[in-house]
Image 1: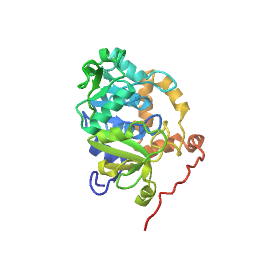
Image 2: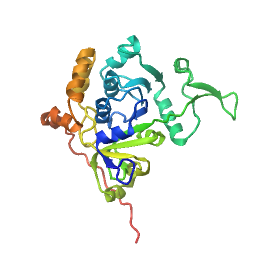
Image 3: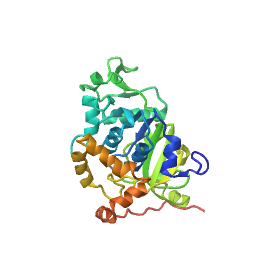
Image 4: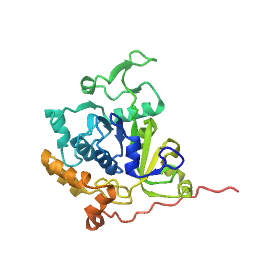
Length: 310
């Protein structure tokens, strides 16, 4: 395995060991689907510490990572257990500093997207109008009121660029060079990847380059910015991968109960993360009966003719 060299295909263990370091700013993006829980679990398993976790919508995977003690800071725009309620490990850290404080930096969804865009574009800031009337600039001094250089009476806000040390992006398929194709909700996977110093692409399946070239408009992440390609089927559970498996709603409901108690949460981490050697073990432990419940059925996209000229 040669991470960052000609051969970009790596195991999750090797990719995390090589590319995620203590003290890093890490973004595991994905909006509703393609949230790479397997990468978060491997970061926990390898005992990373003092990470800054960035994400538009920190949900259960960041609750697990914060509960495991890998993070000291959270940069986000909304957090919660989607459709269920609170993230209890994060709340304990913020509200009671149990077992340690957690620094937080909050933006709106669009504010976080603009931060990634500024980072990807190598801009010093990004102007945004939508904070007018909001309390977020009061809560977060990094959201700064500015005047338009063309009309001093026009008041805007600026947000700083976001440059993650590592962005972890999940895709349905990728080739060995890292060209990654996504369909369904995109979120800000592309922006986060271009803003990052190092990029890990995790995919459901590895395909030949001619598969990618036959449908180039689905390529969201180009291989030229990718450092490692990890082939990890079912890596998003309990999130979902459009066309591969559905969202495991039962898990999110169960998490609300078990995360309320630190000892119960630690027991879950021990059983489902620390005591397993890889995500393949997690998939096997969950069981085929559960996976059959998550099979999505077929809904094929239409075909297009790109045209050929000899």
